[in-house]
Length: 525
Image (cartoon, rainbow, N blue to C red; front, side):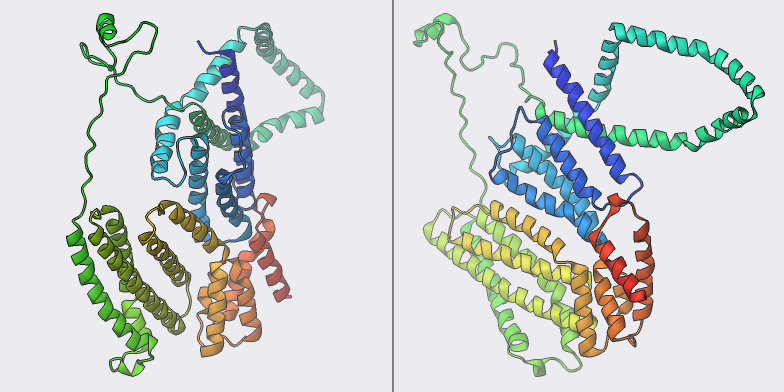
């Protein structure tokens, strides 16, 4: 039998979830994301901490640190307008919120950077929450059925019956009054039009929106509060469970009535995990390092020693850079995978082989650093020849990110106590937040403007397709260099996009849009 407390909690949490869904509808229905996104994120966390206040209270520790990237990424919808990052953040923020809330409820047995958090999140969504989808309907039915047993509900039923009985009389009286007064007749004739403007289909869709969001919020919160208990298989007929046996048999073993039943040891000898032979791994690493050493010598002769005269006839630096950049990045990713496999999959029980593998892996990291430097320089040369794009800037950032991961792995080679997952998780989240805040479109526009000043070449049409963060640089290009090909057309295209900003609601407010609209309006005047 369900207690009154749990029944009240169900109704209260469901009502709060529906209220939060109403807020979601008001902020997002028919509108683009702006300040609405951080506002709803804040509303959800208010709902979450209120719902779990009796089970889990906020603690001022590392658990709240995960709120920092959540808040910063949600805030990007108010600050910037890069479409790519808006799409990615629309998925990243809910994912981080699920990780944070799941970990918050299980912090006694789980850490957010452990591999088990992936399984915990999947269980929370598909095992603990989705099974509760019918629950809101059950709660509402229980509320209605419970209310109908009260005296107030009986009075409400009588009122509804009176309304139904009065309808024929209202129609008769209304018709008589309409005949008696022309103005009243005109008002009554407008009622069908007013009802038609309500757009029943739209109202139904809005109601379904609120119901769907409210249901999703409720089942997730209730799944956090009351996860599905683990499955305990029943013992087969005739099987003896640990500690089982007759009282006499247990008494012979020294057991006294009233004391805990002794458990029978069922320990199973652990299975030794498969490991890569150390000799095979060392041979593979030695062969790869030999090739990488030769590659490093070639790179120093071409790039780092200024050996442009050694390039084949008819091949420019830009062409040379373009040919090998993708391959170098691919080899770098392969080396990183090989590094992780060797660190965690190779047999390093032998002390000599352990030191040999560490040394070979250290050489692998050093040679990979040379490859990253070469790829970085190739990309710089390519950008100088063909211009800056969002993709090229993101690839440059990805190479820096890989370099940081390799540096941490190099430290791990000489410090076995370091668990890579924690620093890697922190670096990955921090890098993603940072790339959101460096304003990639502004970096691209600024780089192309400097390139135009140095070379006289620019793709102004591409700048006109960037987000509003590029507006100041496009205005500067047209103001300082009105003769730049395509600059005027690109500026006009961005002005047309900015004109729509003035018609947005307050929930769609965006700093970058507002700033660009003001600058473009001032430039037009």
